[in-house]
Image (cartoon, rainbow, N blue to C red):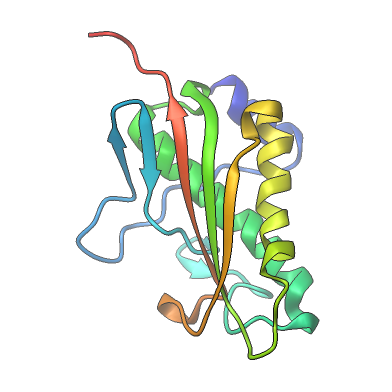
Length: 159
């Protein structure tokens, strides 16, 4: 276990097992020194977490969605680890994109994204500072409340 995973445990969280791909795609792909994740849902043990992981988000469900964004982020980190072998290879989080299944009139997607952004900062410090998009959408796969994509700059051994 690397330094980053130990830090995740120290803050009271666990890096989950990588959720199985639900189609013909890879959970993460390396291109040069960047790793791009596929969209990650707030899944735990293969199921959307409750509360907050399922259905459309509104002001009343915002706090649950913030928690769900942290769960989805941990799944994205597990996807990165599947490519790099260790989260210690991450040099910088480049971009976080969050899609929120939003009820009409909900415009606090950026606050939901803060859950994932703050966790990245807590785990990686200045290397967790990233660019970000937070987008409201009508529907997501499995009736999920949100979906996260990450792009991470990583170091790889010279072969």
